[in-house]
Image (cartoon, rainbow over all chains, first blue to last red; front, side, top):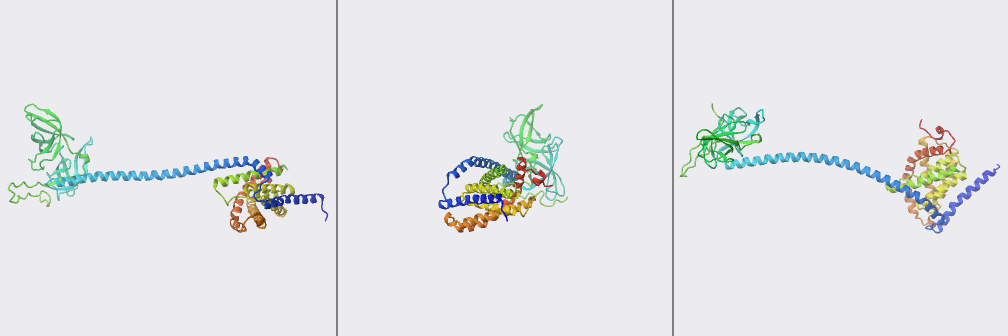
Length: 295
Length: 181
């Protein structure tokens, strides 16, 4: 088979070309760490290219890393926002529980301070006027315990009286009700009178002009009516209105915020009178509601 | 000649790109052998003479030697021999489509790695390379081949498009590169 000149030339070129790496390998085998001037020149020529590519790749990598970081931050942000919502909700619940706890503590303290026979009741409903004033509240004690006329107190003061006692609940007539009348006295001057409900958020009391009444003076129950225990706060004088004659009318704002009541106390029986001699047992005061009421 | 220059330049750029990306992404073993894909393209396109293709292969191998810090001549010789084998195979096989290009990249990468390890194994003593390290390197060759498999089809298509754009491939575009239709 005849070989063409071109084939011979190509074969020779292939051999020569393969000889180049063989020679390079031989040189490397003699000194593996030596770089020739040609090697250094090639590296010098390629260095800017490699630097540019590395820089671009670095920028791309930094962008990618930042993008991933932002995505992670977004995920973290959403997770923290969810936790924040949950914790805020829990905080609101805790605040509510704290307020409830404080009210219950005050109610318990009141129970320890007041000698009357009382039973706690929870507010289960309110009636409001068209102006959003509370005009009547409903408690969860029915006729088994309560009966009309029993006093209803709260840690802040007098709430009113049982108006209607039904099977499972009772309606309370507030001291601001126009039908309400309570025997009261002023804390400083000791002037006594009958506090009558007037409007949805105030009461009035008429006393003699002989008493030097001041604005802001406290009004307390006098106990004369034997319905309300003596000495419980009822309200505060906010206006003094002189009347024709020797009387003056005092406008009283209740000390109790009826829209914030949760727990009240129903007075079942007044405390027995103190025995000055301390020898005999005091006369038993009949409880008003603990026993089932017989019609 | 110009086509060989394009192969050389593209190969040089890709060597630098792979090095840069490896540095950024902290990759050490799953790096594609882009030079092998270029060699395969050059061999199977048969648009250059064998000596010119061999020159491109040895030059790319030399650049790989410099870049990878291998003993100078190792990858040059491996690339040259790999090109000759691929050129011989190109007379018996045709490569069309993404799958065959990917398979060609995989086989070529394994061939190149095998030749490189063989050269280093033979010259381990004079080059001061421990043979145990060479045996250990055989365990990660599949990652190298797998990365080349993934890179081969897009790189092959890119080379086709570049050669057509530079008017170095006179075939119509539908024949010069696979359009997917």
